[in-house]
Image (cartoon, rainbow, N blue to C red):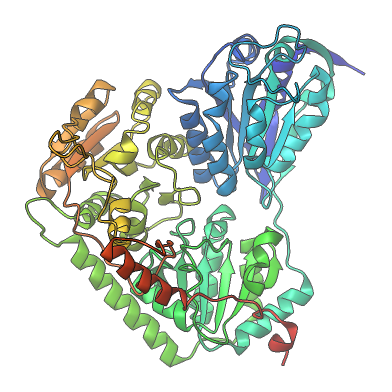
Amino acid sequence: MKTRRLTTAQALLAYLKNQYVERDGVEHRFFSGVLGIFGHGNVAGIGEALQENLDLPYIPVRNEQAAVHLASGFAKASNRLRAFACTSSIGPGATNMITGAALATINRLPVLLLPGDIFARRNVAPVLQQLELPSTQDVGVNDCFKPVSRYWDRIYRPEQLITALPEVMRVLTSPSDCGAVTLSLPQDVQTEACDYPQELFEKRVWTIRRPEPDAVSFERAVAAIRASKRPFVVAGGGVLFSEATEALKKFCEATGIPVGETQAGKGSLPFDHPQCLGAIGATGTLAANRAAREADLVIGCGARYSDFTTASMTAFQNPGVRFVNINTAEFDAFKLSAIPLVADARVALDRLTKALAGYRVDATYSAIIRDGKRKWEAEVDRLFHLGVEPKPAQSEVIGAMWEASGPRDILVSAAGSHPGDLHKLWRTRTPNGYHMEYGYSCMGYEIPGAMGAKLADPSREVYVFLGDGTYLLMPGEIVTAVQEGIKLIIVLVDNHGFASIGGLSRSLGQGGFGTEYRLRAQETGQLDGEFLPVDYEASARAFGAVSIRARDIKELRAALERAKSETRTTVIVIETDRETRVPGYESWWDVAVSEVSEIDAVRASRAHYVEAREHERYHLAGGQEKEVTK
């Protein structure tokens, strides 16, 4: 057997470079590079190996968490067909990545994490940054990655790579078990050499499967759809990941069934498609929420039914509602007692379209869909042009951004009040044009995530929409964007704090306590003084970006046009009216209210909360065979 003598780190990178994926006859190199920061846990191992493998690009970031966000954004925009690895030193460098790992796993995105670890040989312990426990020597901070990783392993000996690496790729390329994978790498083991089999480094192509539904469940699903009078599709992120947007379009056009989109599934249909009713759930449109409420059959397609999608289990109120779920993950397919189609979205939709030949919703339902869509589009136009003075409303900022954007441009956001407003209002025109991280809704994702989206397809303009609160968590990644020549258009809304939670706090009767960026007043000793004098424009300029202050919508439009002509990242800062909000549309989200309080407003909110909870439902009998086959 031919062998190559390499260090563990050298062997790891040699393997990663030769991993490819294939779907529908199209082949991609899977790993596009390595992101991270060097420290004493990885500089002599992976750092040295990267110097010998310059064809695997290395991008240094400013924060290890941001590295994982960038990798997640890249994987999401690549429909999970490409990925980055992320490396860190031991200790704080490693634990900085845990938030990113949770985000990747919750969103089912392939990211490989390579945190440095303490010495496997232990004789020099405790090393700098080592966690010590009196009960064992076999636990370190990297064990914290276990619950937020789809696969976790610690490499104590160089030859363990031989069996670990195929498992890494199995998980990263799985359509159902995808998520963060962590290989914990003791710093001494990274530098130790081994005679590896030459076969380990030969090109390997991993096929991305498109599983077929089983015949029995498929027949029951067809029967359930044919028996329904008001069916409704919930399109989730699986539609985009499986590149099933055209299949969904054909299915809806053939049957007349309307579609509501989750945050991850927005863009499954173009906004102006007759069957597209827009966002569903707690941040949904009036048209989609009314259709969902009356639906007698819900067809979930690549959706995991988060509480925002189900409006905390209040969205589907038809007493006889049943569910059909299309999902590659059995775990999601069985939710809500559904008829489970454990299958690829594109395959299942194509097969359903053929099997349902001759079926179409009736004229009355079609008229309701048309009327609801027409009224909603008029509402969006109204919110885009409110004319609020002296500070514009956030919906007007969104309107100006949308009008400036092109059909293929990408909108990236993640946290605060922006996801709710964008889910309702952004008019997505092409697949992956709406890039929202809402599985974890992680503040700080926006800028690094947008860099990942831009790297995935440099031909598409990328707009980043974020607030002052989330900007302050990770502004340093603007430096990385400048360093790598990654052009972003960042619109930074200055609403003096956490406007989203401020609104939620008020709805709970708590008056927005602790959610505004104010000076501590000497008179009261509380944070109720003047607004903090933060100069976001100067901050962005200091990081190397083009920086513009827009005082109104007219100046915002001009700034957006200028930003499109710039060759480097541009940050546009605009102050908005904090209290002019996009309404809710006959929906609800369960946030518990104090059962006992001395505050009158809290007691009133509690009474409303108790009443609203009465509409929450368990869906336990939706997929029973006796109901479907009558």
